[in-house]
Image (cartoon, rainbow, N blue to C red; front, side, top):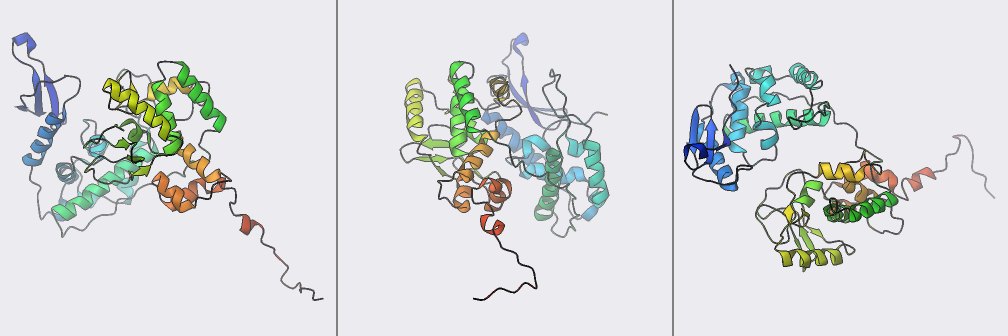
Length: 381
């Protein structure tokens, strides 16, 4: 028997029957029509809201079973109460859910170091998800496996807090994180060549904005692509008048991916003012856009084409690493590590561990320590 795909929005095309097409919520044999007819390519927010309400109303978690409760029930409880969580789309909803595929039918009492390690070994040889027509095959990253197990741990902790407060929580063993990349950045001549190449080709010109914002502000690619010129409940936005970038949407819940408000870099501000004037005249709200259309998914294809022959092994996230590296290695900068960490929205500990060796005065005082033999007496006079 095939596993249920779970509640999901589906476009119901009834045009051949002479009836109106619309989005429906499918859950096994259950089909609930929404009455919303919109583009069949992507469900609108109204449909997503109906789906979330449906999930929240359909299921009651079992209580009092302790460690005999099934992992399926634990994940279902987490899904019900965290439909807006960052991990929801990636680890809870997909039909080929690795967590459920491995842990389904197992109980909380089965969660231990051995089973967690077995899960890691089971996942390692698998391929990452790509488009069905893609010929690219790459192994699942260890960071993804870590994230999956951390999601399982979050689901178990949530079950204890929300459903069974007497539950004895098992320990979820997570593999060690890989060491951070310490020399992963663009040299200044690489960055300039990248910008020059992007400016010359209309197909890559939208990346000029992406690169400049990334190099100056040092934030994550996804946050940069979602920026808007006006306040929004869904996206961060740029306030050129007050020289501020609000990376988090209004009312957005804070996550580990910190989105603290940031001052606009003085070298970027004049350019942002020009871009905003150009976009507002055309009715465009997205800061980074392609022919007026916002880029909400990915820039992988255009980035790959742009970086070919220049820095093709470096992904868009390299801009954040580059900004951090340039800031700590500037010999004329008087910024403290705390100030740089605040600018990049990361901890000072992470900054020093990952980029500290680029600092001009890195361990200078310690490296000049004078060591004398134990029995050597200092000469007097």
